Length: 111
Length: 114
Image (cartoon, rainbow over all chains, first blue to last red; front, side, top):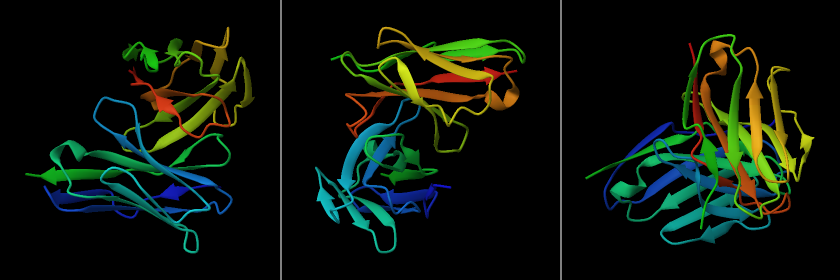
């Protein structure tokens, strides 16, 4: 069945460094990918998205890269801050339907 | 503006009891989704609504789970004869419609079955 997985369950970075969170997906028919951030006790919060016809998209301090050849998605956070500490999920979907989420990566920022 | 709200925020129930979880989507959002997040797991799709109809119920784990939506707004997820494996955080999300990719999540209801 469909699955979206993450390579690293926990990532610890020093404040100010860049963070890279990786994700592998299996459904080549997915046309939309999203990164969510989830802080303790809260629901997932949208960070950035990318359509399957793109390979890179930049936001404020965040960049998402999509490599359809190897079905790989990554989230890059520049100048990581303590407030970035959270669980990050990648998700895929087809045409606005249900989201298929990965297991999540814990990002810990050390001051 | 107001986001997605869910109630209760926490629910502890005894095995075998029925529970109802409520979701209030963002006003004007016609699509509503339910997900379940078990400890240490990702989010698992349960069901979604477009208006009051549920085109996709494929994620409901068993016939003990049901959901309804009335008036195109509030939705209720009901779990009958709860089991310990039902313990999880139940998250609701809404989007403008099913053609909108961006889903906005509520804070979730943490269900504990003892």
